[in-house]
Length: 281
Image 1 (cartoon, rainbow, N blue to C red):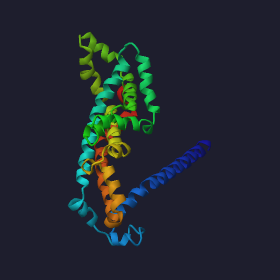
Image 2: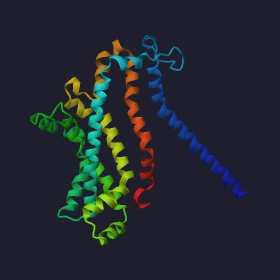
Image 3: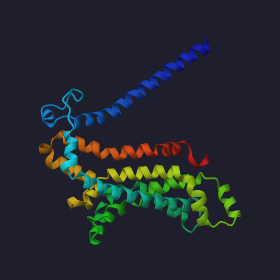
Image 4: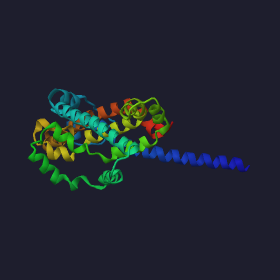
């Protein structure tokens, strides 16, 4: 009897948790559904009301306008170049630094690691003025390198890889050392393949951050041809929202979000593996 009551109580708790999760999911998805719905509505209808997104009429004109007349492809190309370049360079730097802190001993290691972690506490706005001045004097504004370089100092990436390397059993490296393998060979052929889930997670996080970055490109990219997607869309919304229409702007937002969705679908398995426990298993 007591067991039966416990089962019923457990079922009630599960149902309440499920209801709460469904409610949170609806709250999270609702703005996305609203944006997609507006993207398929005629602009003359949206001039009167933005409600009734599920009621006709619908149109694909907003997306056709993007393909035909918008500069969004140039901005998207810039975002891809910046995001991919920043992702690969951040992975290389963070992986090497994380392995160095986790597996090697050198003078000042503890102090250096503390300084790296302290970088997490420094807000971006605190260094924007000296950063802007330094890049302006080096004539690096309105260049891809100028958009990529400031974000390569990524303390979170170093800390993530450091923690992951700490979870790799030392016995694996010791076995390779018995076969007279060098430290560099052990890193590339033995240890590095075990960190693919962590690298995928860090890579996706870095790509998303670079793709959605707004503050630094707003400072560094002053020429329209060097705008990233976030800056280009913001300029469109500021200057042409009344002439282009809300539906057109929402279509641009949907178009900009598709690469991120595709990226996540491809690397979802690696993210789950990293969260589930990665190298130790």
